[in-house]
Image 1 (cartoon, rainbow, N blue to C red):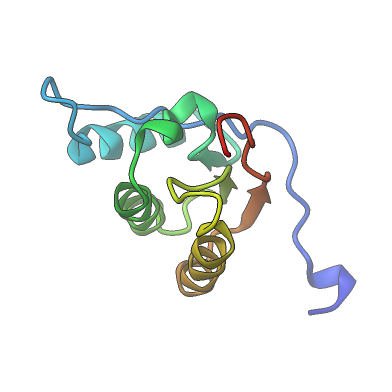
Image 2 (cartoon, one colour):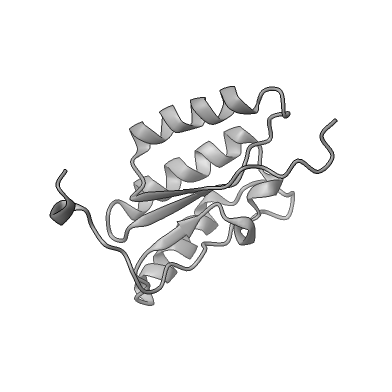
Length: 124
């Protein structure tokens, strides 16, 4: 890809909140409504799995399900920025977990990924 072919993203990329059911399960139908509402209101792109979206409460499997749903439901209507802020893996397993996540993202193709190393608070 040449420099002129690389898309430039700007303007508003709000974080999509993650809805939960009353029993604290992911509300995937509610998430579809959230994504549609954001698009209907004219946002320029959507950021998923940032701190505002409660990513720290989700297991790795739930995060993967959320990414899959967001990418398939938005289906190119807006660019997706995937915020990756650590995993639920322990510190010793973190490199392998991040590597597996990176490999899975190649298949899912968000428009951009924002990475942040996990906090080391509480690790021995």
